[in-house]
Amino acid sequence: MRISYILVILIVFAWPLNYLYQRQLGAISFLLLAIFFLVISLKELKKLKAAKKNDSEKARPQKIK
Image 1 (cartoon, one colour):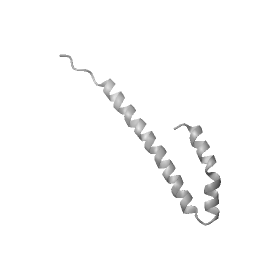
Image 2 (cartoon, one colour):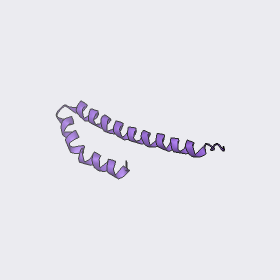
Image 3 (cartoon, helix red, strand yellow):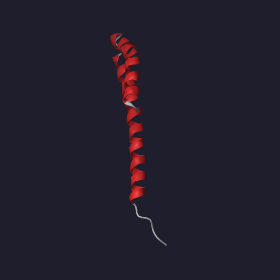
Image 4 (spheres, helix red, strand yellow):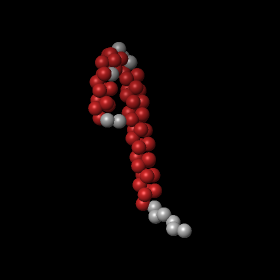
């Protein structure tokens, strides 16, 4: 994901998360943030695995018959 999208999402959800934190429900805020960052990291990991797979296929010499 682009950094700008992540920043916009965090800014938009800053007020509701702060509201929950002020109401002594801070654990919900941290849980939602943890899920958000987990989704981002899984997407990045998926991209890295795909790039690594493509690089290994290009580096592997083809068999000549």
